[in-house]
Image (cartoon, rainbow, N blue to C red; front, side, top):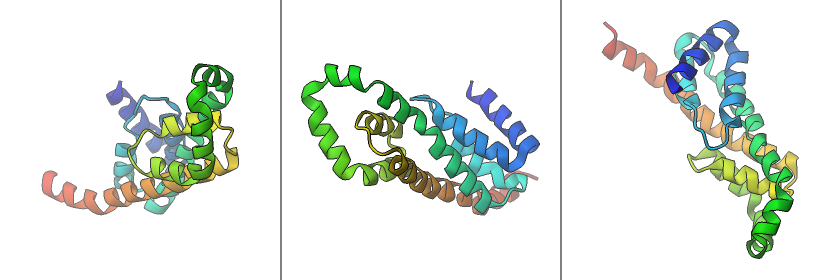
Length: 163
């Protein structure tokens, strides 16, 4: 499945250029708990001739939009989850409202499971604008690091391994 996604993503980039990068960001982060090789794709995207600054921005923006899926699940499932986990709910809700923005940024910029944070944000009715902004900041930082790593490392890799 991952290999098929990678081939599809490469074709999408070749056919739709920057819009393809944006779409891949949205699709790959919309999947809950199913990691797709999105970051590998943006690592190699500049070797296809794309500008790293634009790739970073569009992949970060698309990724932040995709994270709204988890937020929506939490927002919609609030009543069920609140009934089931009542004794933890108020404590978690207070903590998230106090520390939510930084938590979202940290989880978005690291390999921590940001889907869980999105679900919690929705459950706590964290403001969607703040959730999106925090996700975007974290994803933009992460995508910029990965994209520019590929931009600077890929020429060396190609020189060493391609004859």
